[in-house]
Length: 294
Image (cartoon, rainbow, N blue to C red; front, side, top):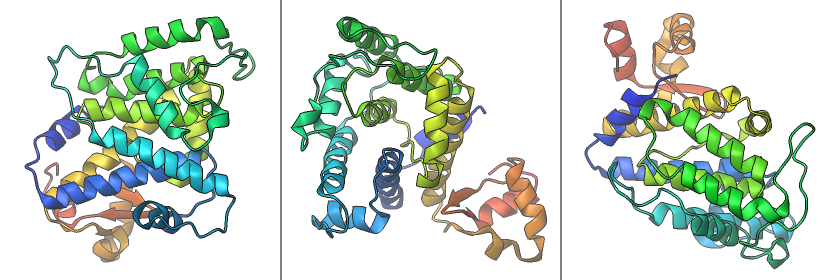
């Protein structure tokens, strides 16, 4: 899936308050998805209450709230970073930043050794061998160096999948490597001025399986999932820029629902999935019917 044209359209959007609000929602969705992948029991309402009002309902173990708070702090640090222009000589990510993200994500749990390299042998899965502890620092340095420059837009999903797959195989830290890897990927996207990778919680198992496959060298499932998720993020920002509300497809389609859902499935009608429901806009449907691309 080549999303370069869509990414270029998002970069060309004029600044608007509606876009800023939607970008903030995407960042929160990204955090929710990352926590779900890690097995967090917090609902979206509980996560919002914790971050926005500092409230912990007490219905879950304390560690769940501490983990969510720490990862929210790390995500906030990523959001504060500025994008780098294509010709900027600075690296998109450094080893020091990878260690910092891990330290931020585990700040409330000192037993996880925030920012400290792994000291024990790790075995990700059968037939996959992680570097020995003495090679972790070197391998992480090589990883950061490999992904220091802007990739071609069309190759972005595969490029990011390669980063996540290699990070998972290296396992730089003794714990919380998944969270650290996703935060590092978020930083790369931020530096590239790309929308967040807001993976829906219901696709957590699919993401985990794709990363495991990527560790073994097959990046196709992870690449496809990243491309689809980024495309959804882009469409949300584009809809916000047009001032056109996203509405359930079933509501807008009326008696034409069967035909329009097929158009969505074939990629001809832009749409966004939220909590199992398909959303689109009246303008996108009109453009599809007129034979123009929204």
